Image (tube, rainbow, N blue to C red; front, side):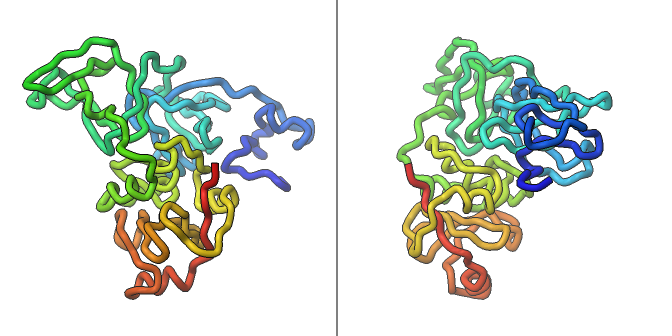
Length: 282
């Protein structure tokens, strides 16, 4: 369909279904439907290219993240989007919650755990990640000088919600060095290049689209890089630490690493493929 991007525009040419936002852009052979609000449950949720667990993960919804359900299928799958960036994919419907998490706090630790009891020796019952929304019940316990907060699932140390030290996406990105590369991932348990950029900028309320090409289109182009700019390559993006050095999630090292453009075999390859730099402006 001319002018429509299937990553963010919900239309099914075979089934002739489309979201109502596309009224006037598609003909009346389509049945138009209103997406319904939903939220990710207590675990990270992989969105797939097709309603099949073996299909590629296209993005990942973090715990408590706001979603829209376009279609709930009879086979238990849902066609949905992440509301913050409008990205579409398929996930199992039972992983969704119908109501927004109440009393939620945003996780600021890269990774963490929920414990069955307020003790580090207690059983781990769930994983946390930067950006997750965790509903708190209000109960607080101090144990051996550690402050624990009760959640819907169990107990979390309050340090997982401590404010980030400064508003520097590049510094935050450096903390991800060594994190595994996962296609479509958006958490410190595993992520891809654009997922890293989106996550670290989003931690400081600087919204970015999901994919590298979308991010490049959204940012103002600049001729020379400074710290915090994004560097763009075909299908790839990194966060600049200065004029030449860059941190990025990549499948070459299968993790988050630091490269210097123009230095070493990989750095020279990146320099040769560089499309330009983009700067996030308020």
